Length: 436
Image 1 (cartoon, rainbow, N blue to C red):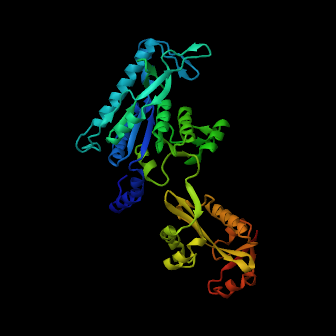
Image 2 (cartoon, rainbow, N blue to C red):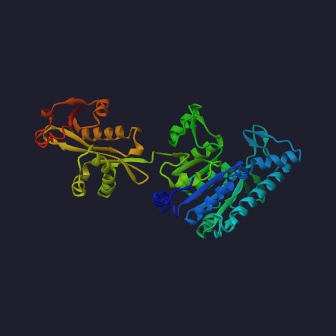
Image 3 (tube, rainbow, N blue to C red):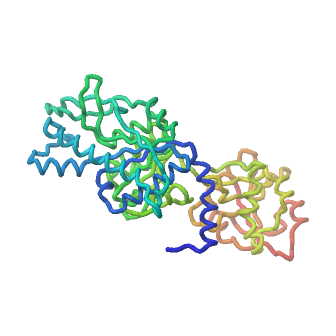
């Protein structure tokens, strides 16, 4: 798809807030050996180079499972597993070293490419790796000796941060080293999760063969809280790679603010997930990133932009900036990634112990997701705390919605006296009331 000149400008402008938000942040990117073999992987490398040029601190963690399987098969070594872990004897460890080293060299080569007329031209990216993961043996489980299979003991946080502070990309392989000089085969999910936690990363991004996390009905879960995901997983109501799910859940539970699942098969998935409001995969977080709160004076511009189309259509009464600044303390807003996508106001009529709901608005791209109900619940809670007995609203277009929320139609005479005096008969708004 070729964008027009204006569409390209609009796209660049809309991504600017995310460019600023991501600069200087630490992201851990996790991808298995399957991603390395996919035709789209060079495009992922180009996008990683772009992130690096925008000042994002990147730690890449790769897997090598299919590459290890291929080498084991070529050497006629029996593949043995227990407890969903590979048993790594000495012969298998040689295959692990060969596969992981080859995979690392492949990634480093792609990140070094600087051909003219390519996205990597002039990138000059430095990639650093080494003995940054200290490992320990899994040991013997249920009588099974896992030999050279290990798990992460410690991440060299200072060493990684030194490289990141120097502007380099850090590349971690699925191998670790012990203080006694041994080499252990690790799962790249364990390395990625432990690295993200140790580094206190801002994001863990897991590449998957799935577009994201789906429920059993096939719906993509674009945003889900960790406890909800854990419950769906326990109830076998999730369609996603188990290793990816474990990494997402574990990282968020340990304090990583956001964990993403995107497809390594979709060109541009990484950029779309990071630089557009709705992304293209699944986002796991501890608590929902749409914040409902009382408005502040800094929200005036955002509220004006939100309600302007509704004022122009006649659905809302026009409010000047000056008036909104004076009345901002009455407003509630829902904020999504810094953008106000819904608002509503509560005006008090203390003598009558009544409150007016006004200026209810939701951005056209975010309607139909119960945001109006969330605002109404917040207003009802606030009204009860203030000792109000009922709420009322004047509307010309949304009568049915308020009826669905339990309001009943009322007469103009039921309005508080001061409000009744200001009633606009030309507008002919209908009155609805709700007893608290």
